[in-house]
Every structure is written in C-alpha cells, then in structure tokens.
Length: 316
Ligand SMILES: [Mn+2]
Image (cartoon, rainbow, N blue to C red; front, side):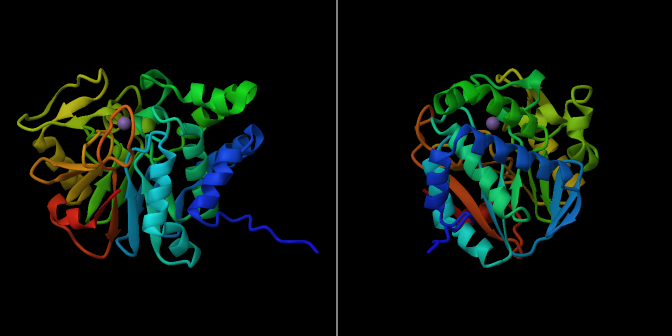
C-alpha cells in the first residue's frame, strides 16, 4: 500500500521541518521557481493589482502584516501559528499575508526563513506579498553586516554560492511598496522624499540610482521635530520629517504608513502624530527586544491613525 504524503505546506511546524532538512537542490529549485512566479506577476492576480513593483489591494478580508524577521525562524513559526494564516488560506478564506522585507542576516536561521516565506508563496501565490528590505537591496546598496552567505555556507557547504546568487536574483523581483486602497501605504523603511505620484513607488527600482526613491524606501527612518530630510546615520537613506510623511499619505490617498526597518523593544512604535506604525517581528540577538509584534487587520475597518491599529497588534 502506498501512503500518500501531503506535499502541501501543512502546518507551520511542517514548514519548519521542511526548511531544516532542505537540501541545496531543494532550496535552489524553490528560489528559482519563486523568482519566475514574481517575474511574471503583473495586472490583476486575486485581490492584488500589480503595477511595476507596487501591489494595490482592495480593503476586503484580513491582512497579516509582518515586519523584519532577520533569520529568526522561531518567531516566524509563532506568527504563522498564532495568526492561523495557513489554516485560513487553505480553506480559501480571504486573507493576505504581507512581509515588509529583511528576511535574512543577523539571525542564525536566515536560509530557513527564506525557505519558509518562499514555500508560503509557492503554496499560496495569491495570498502572499513579499516586499524588499534594505537587506534585499541592489548591489550598490548592500546592507552591512551582510552575513547571509555565511549562513548559507553553514547549511549548504560548497553549493552555497549558487544559492546565494539565486537569492540575489530573486531580490530584484521583491515589491517596493503595497497600497491598501484608501487605508494604508506599506514599505520597508521610509518615504521617498521626492515622490510625487504612486508611480514613483511602482518604478523606484527602474529609476535607481538616478533617483533616490528606492534608496529612501529601503533605508530611511522617520525623525520627530524636523521638516524635510536630513542625512541618516545609517549612511544610506535619509531621516524624514512629518511633512514628508503627510505628503506621501496625500499622494497615495491613505491614512497610515506601515513600515519595518527599526528595532523596537516592545515590537512596535509610532511616529509623526501616529501617522506611522513601525513593526518589528523578531527577537533575540543583536537587539534583545522583549517582544516582537505583527499586525492582524480586518481591512474593511477604517483607521484614522496608528493608535487605532494598536489593538490589532499581536505581541509574542
Ligand atoms: Mn531594514
């Protein structure tokens, strides 16, 4: 008798064990497969309307929004378990999971985190949106320290350089920003200070490096008490004031900017009179924050500011 083994993703714990035992070949196939899927994503796919590297979604159903994971596989597993994303998506409930970027580096399980998010995309292609963080940036804007290759080497030995170049190719197709119609604008780091239309979000990667849109999206941070922008201590991107945030909200016809990028002791923080919500979805070294957090929204509900989102934040 042949016993059928479920090849779908199953439970979060199944995904974790698949990620742990993935061979270099498994991993490469998955990365290349998702790169092809992302390269072809365009126009209307499920609830997603794709223009360039911008995804617009209608405010229906639920959204799970996840900030920086940085190689913390156990936090990612906790988020998948607590949010019941896989269970709901398997039953075809209307739910979208959006990652704000920064999957690898810093955490010991960077390869496994990539495996899990890419497997989720493979199983639920219309329900997973993968955004680009500064750790998935272009060659001329590499984050430092960038220890992904070391973690791949530990896991895959000699095959690690192939897996690394495949991931670098995938990075080119991750999304710059997400718009949830009339509600939220999502990006990894900060506001492109010269952006005058949502096209500047959609095509920021094509204008890089002649325009700074992509650099600012990936690297910038909000700062209180300034107008315009200032140089950033990160060495890339800018610090931006509330006026810059207000302009993006006006241009994108949204109320709140939701972003990742900055560590936070309690897993989230707000800025610019609660026009910005920052999520940080991992724990452990080097930040040693007490909690990580993710957001679970019913998109049909309206929110005027980030304060009204706080009771939808789930800490772990
Ligand atoms: Mn970042």
